[in-house]
Length: 505
Ligand SMILES: Cc1cc2nc3c(=O)[nH]c(=O)nc-3n(C[C@H](O)[C@H](O)[C@H](O)COP(=O)(O)OP(=O)(O)OC[C@H]3O[C@@H](n4cnc5c(N)ncnc54)[C@H](O)[C@@H]3O)c2cc1C
Image (cartoon, rainbow, N blue to C red; front, side, top):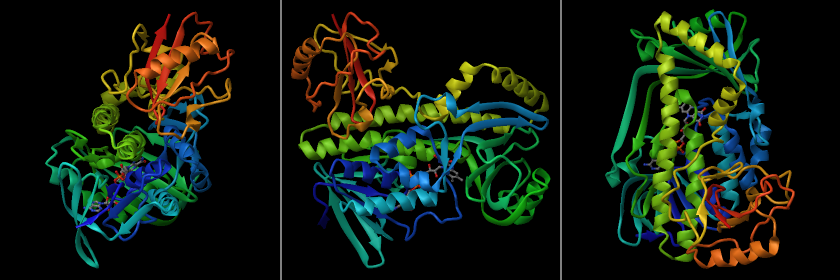
């Protein structure tokens, strides 16, 4: 049996496996990706087309955003209509992020860019055409059986991650159960190369109870058309060229269609694994939590999960200490996070399913009413952009409460379990720039540098995992300091989530 020493074995080189290899490479941890397919997702099979702001922050952290920005087209508004006209438009410009848009590009481009950068790191090996048929583990290693054109072989490594998609072999071989939620309906996706009069920088969603549909521009001259497959229509019929052309002609009579690129039918359903960790094996991406295709969040949630997982794997391998509690926390936190998104998706799927005209009218009225409430729009967009997610960290291994301190859920815009707020304009640092494997302790309360440093030395003594030794002290004018009379500290993880906030009188 061959051994892959001191690195992570990743099964599946889709967007999540590739992203994970890049996170690990940031921490100088080698990885080996075994990928069954000879080629990335085909150019014409667009699949995941959306990078949300939180995903772009991840790309910025990796230092590779410009590669995506060069290829992508931007969407700045979400627009919902019914058969009679516009109901609501929610803009990305209310978001507190430098990325006040979503970036659209085909999954093919995402995979090609990630793979190219991963190979250039020199510490990511990608074996295409290598299919994993079996997976197991012992106390100190994971093992796989692999089939390739050159023959079959076995391989072991200290840690393994199954990023092998919704029908994960790894999940199956480990005996991890999955719950499948089915919404009793099919939807279809058809991609076109065409010119039409629709605005390119908004999502054009029409909540028509006879057949809801939407158009999304995602690459030069390329459009995605999504629509519900109605009861009585077969999936084959609803994705045939004749059916789609007729549907398109009815909705966009003036479109100049050059070619249809791809069409496929999908069940509206979502899968959830019962755990994302079993011993030395972890699950990430669709292998852990498969989102329904019509809600468009699967790749993003998976990639953000890889960000949350990467530092934990790196820490375990680098220190040779037992940081398995961190791996358990990944399983719990990411699972709750993914369930939250799935619950949002369930709402979207139920909306797609509405055929009753009376209900549809009620929905239009409701949407029109909330369209005037900017606070609701801001919250909805924060959710969509995956910026507002709060992870359940109360019982996590690194949730520290130093003696004599009082734990806080929140201080200003600093919220336990949430990503760190943007404070770039006010100070000369931001945790997004921190690339280390350590947590960062940030003073956000009373301004008194010497005393803050003394308190930090005390806090540091009680922490069992690496914390950046340079206490981060934003300047005294930072509005987060808020004229506070107490010393307040926030502990931030390498993936920029705030794990604890505590106050020392
Ligand atoms: C039509 C459609 C539209 C979508 N739109 C969006 C969107 O707009 N936004 C979004 O975020 N998500 C979207 N998604 C979801 C998105 O495509 C997936 O969530 C995403 O691809 C998951 O990435 P992954 O790396 O976890 O899994 P996958 O992309 O499925 O990759 C898994 C990889 O593992 C490989 N593999 C599988 N088994 C083995 C094995 N035994 N051995 C070796 N390799 C193996 C596969 O070949 C594959 O390359 C869409 C999906 C579809 C189908």
